[in-house]
Amino acid sequence: MKTIPARNPRTGRIDGEIENWTPAGIGGLANELRRAQTAWQDNGLSCRRGALLDWRDELHRRSEAIAEALTADTGRRQISRLEVQKPINLIDYWLQQAPALLEGEAGRSSMAPSVDWRHVHAPYPLVGVISPWNFPLALASLDAIPALLAGCAVIVKPSEVTSRFVRPLTESVASIPELRAVFRFITGDGSAGAGLVDAVDAVCFTGSVATGRKVAVHAAQKFIPAFLELGGKDPAIVTADADLENAVRAIARSAFGATGQACQSLERAYVAREVYDEFLAALVECARSIRLNDADLDAGEIGPLIFAGQAATIRRHLDDALARGARVHCGGKIENHGGGDWCRPTVVSEVSQDMLIMREETFGPVITVSPFDSASEAVALANESEYGLSAAVFAGSQAEAEAIAARLEVGGVSINDASLTAAVNDVEKNSFRLSGMGGSRMGPSGMSRFLRKRALLHQTAPAASIHGG
Ligand code: NAD
Image 1 (cartoon, rainbow, N blue to C red):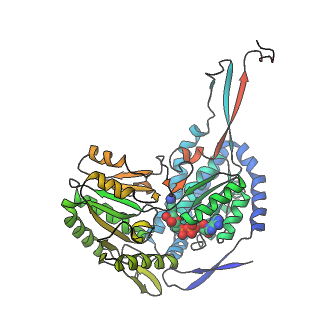
Image 2: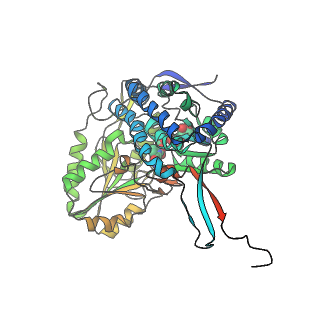
């Protein structure tokens, strides 16, 4: 068995190892799950519902063990405890939605009025879910749970950076034989990810644009659908009439929460010149009040940088910005505490749109603040990006906010708050530009994207003759 070292983000030390699954091993597992998937599909929703409810109970029962493994993976405990609630909430949500979504529709064709039709759903037999290190369990659950309820078998491969939680998760499924037959977690690096793409009928990928491109090409060669949820460089727009206190509160939570390691973390703020100084001062004050939880896992607001490579990216962006005249008001350094990499909330001003910190995803607790003179200028600056994940607008009225939001080239806009897409998983949204591709994983399409429609077409009149009539 080949293994990969596991690094502890709080100490920087290698204190474990994970198995690196081989393509042959993944292929064998895929065959096993495919065989079991037929019964999973044929036994119907009530059987799948029973298995998912049993799993929900197991997740409750084992929540502390799973949260502790996630804490070891990510170096943060509070968020890890919340993360265990995500699959539980998603099971509840999808169990409510599934009956209507799985109901095959029927009707009469308007183009051939003697033909009655009925849809029979054909789920993709085996779905692969590849997830990143920032929310290892939550992001895998967003895809895996609706796929399972749709009738698919599912193999999840989390990031090699955060795979300790796989053990308690696997244990939570082990006592439910019908679920274990169709739902497995594997571990490994990019080679295991590629092996998984080779073995499945559809792939859900969450991660960076660079890897997303590789997965898209690979899936195209395999002729399977790829649902891609990739990076972002989310902007916030704050107009002169906005409630500034509310804007600062929301923007700070979004930019610095989870140490900025969320795809929908705000990384750029554009603020009306009239209120720019006041906003900047308040945001810096708020940023300075945020504490690291380096000394005590249960105290402070933000944890370490999970992935060592991310510290290098943050440093590169800050160095580039400083060399080109930007001003750092607080934070701004990678600090070593107890062997781990930490970054205090960082506010940067006097930036230009061509700096790395404005163009590339930083994925740390870092936000830039720039002034604008008109709503059109704000929209143009916000849209000057290769990404199109989400955005936030703070304005004096709903009409003003919506007029701005409607012109932003992104798939989700939080109004008078930020990063609402992290909590609102029941509303469809697409990722624009390089931020993703494929049907929404939120809302009804989160399940229906796994269901191919087979149309049964009943001719109720005599079949047409080749001779006409
Ligand atoms: P990453 O792209 O480095 O890795 C993601 C996953 O892909 C890992 O499991 C990795 O092992 C696997 N992988 C690597 N090479 C592969 C290959 N050739 N084929 C198949 N799989 C392969 O991403 P990361 O650094 O783990 O995560 C951070 C990124 O994820 C950020 O860009 C962030 O914005 C993005 N993200 C997006 C969303 C979203 O919903 N849009 C949510 C969270 C994170």
